[in-house]
Image 1 (cartoon, helix red, strand yellow):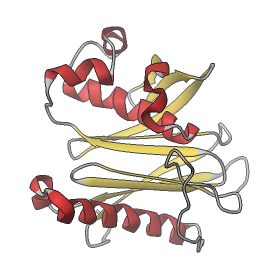
Image 2 (cartoon, rainbow, N blue to C red):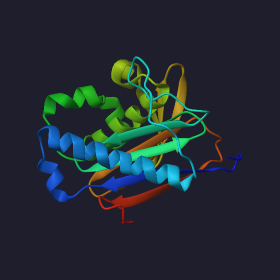
Image 3 (cartoon, one colour):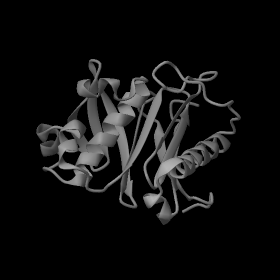
Image 4 (cartoon, one colour):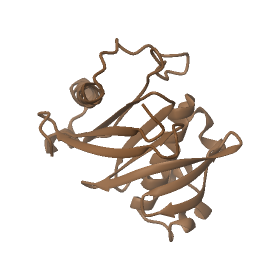
Length: 201
């Protein structure tokens, strides 16, 4: 890839019945959707990478310079593959228990987006998760991760480990998806959507 490279993020929407699927069957279906998303990314980049290996924190290890990240919510899976560190997260926008809000974001962070709404809370949450996944630490350092600025309707800045990380987002089908990468600033990000059959949505 060149400094004007392209980064492809694949989002796969599951069948509506998956929202209420619990237990092992639901977990396996969501995992398969995330693999479908990753397979699409690899085909788009003409890659044939082996199965992922993970470090002690569960973060996927790079293979020959290629970094991978996957995520899934109840209804949507996301994946990305890049020649630099990258993290992706996706979450459904839906009311949760009120006591979860302080874990997701602070009042000051919400005020940067105009105040509390479940959409704003999940927008912040996915941005933080994308950065933490890129850093390879997951939720272990959530308390050290903070929203610091709003770029535009689909760009946030999150501070972690002494620097600000740009996060690119998209909202569709009652969900937020977020990606953060350490590639060139000129990298173009494309969001590609599939349904659960692998058909372009």
